[in-house]
Length: 103
Image (cartoon, rainbow, N blue to C red; front, side, top):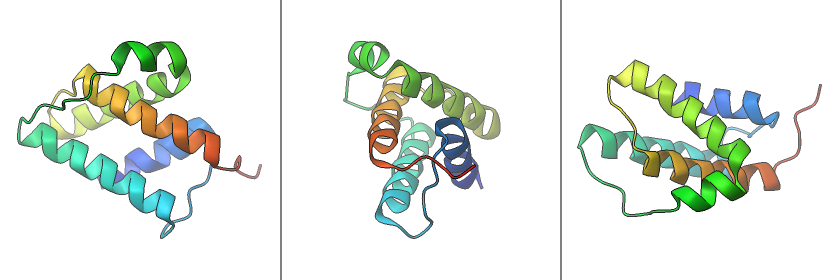
């Protein structure tokens, strides 16, 4: 449920549609699943792209922050800024690749 809600939020915030079953959908789904798994297991992410992401992907960083805040409420686990920035990089790449959702 948490993963599906996060994907719906990303789609809505980015005004994109990610086709279920597509490579992009699967990749995002697994990204969020592994992110949640790391948080539950208290594992640390090695990636440190926080400053870059905040500067070059500010919109995606805000979306990732919002997604992680909602996941935090749902799971009762706080997401590190590293996790937020890693998700933001994924969101930014998707925003550049996906077509805007039909209105």
